[in-house]
Amino acid sequence: MPQTDATAARNRVGVMLPRDLPVREVLPYARRAEELGFDQVWVVEDLGFRGGLAQAASVLASTTGITVGIGILPAGARNVCFAAMELATLAQLHPGRLIAGIGHGMPDWMRQAGAWPASPLTLIKEYTTALRLLVRGEPGPAAGRYVHCEGVRLTEIPDVVPPVILGVRGPRSQAAAGEVADGLLLAEPANPAYVTSSLRNLGGAAYGGDLEVVTYDIAAVDDDEAAALDRVRDGLSVVGEPDWAPHIGPLPFAAQLREHRAACADARQFARTMPADWVRELSISGTPDQAREAIEARHAAGATSVVLAPAGPDVPASLASLARALGPRP
Image 1: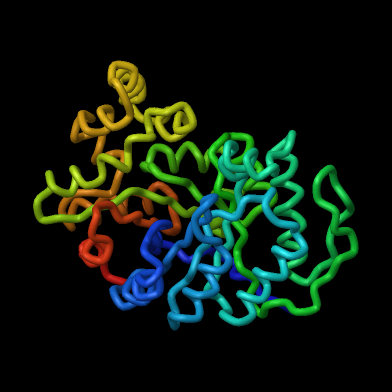
Image 2: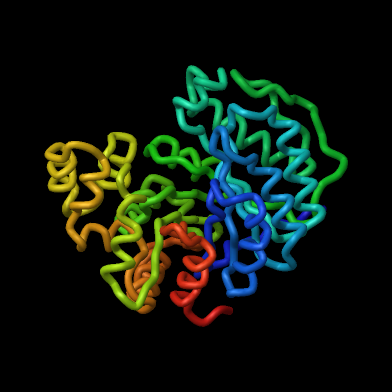
């Protein structure tokens, strides 16, 4: 019988593999992240860039022990039976080293691809339920509104079943993660207040200790705090837009941030003129000690894994700088 870890590993620190990293640097980046002591490397799947499953397979094969997360695969992009086969195969070949993130996908991208459903919440609940059953080797559930895999059963299943978590923002979708998934992935910025409010949306499942709660944050580390803050600013240009309201709402300066965005001519001006205190709260940036404190604050708020998205033009150098924020590794 396949095994599932009863309790999510805690206090992990990962790093994001940038979606536009030159192809010749992708696998060296992953190997360097492992050498530097990161626990996880996360690949992303954004329309027009690289596929999440192909990246995960390549990174798993080119490293030895680091966990690889996929954040996220849009539910509307793949038939659930074949997605389950891909994930089960990866988990078979690399036991205990995979976390699979599922999400709605960005609405505009999914509409472009002809894959945006009338009810994204219904789709993701049906899809996640079926995916977890199939990867465990159990028969697919009865047909739903979108997902049809009744009676399908995988014969090749992993010894260690990978967690399936939902990368979602809205309170109803986060509540669904508590019902049908193994945890939650919170896109950047995932400040501690946002982590806390999201855990409330998860409901009672959040406090049992067995859910993965993964956070993403733009990150930069430098002995010169001002230089680190400056590097993350461009990555924060989107946080004043309506889609990011759930991230901003729990913050004590939410109203002022909205006013600041309304007063700025564009998103870049908004980010470049944001007060330094806001930048610190909306990123993991500063000196090594300051960045370490920000990571610890997210863990204390309930994150099991804190994932750093490197900011700045020199990605290899940024990766090495971020490693300076790592505390003692288990």
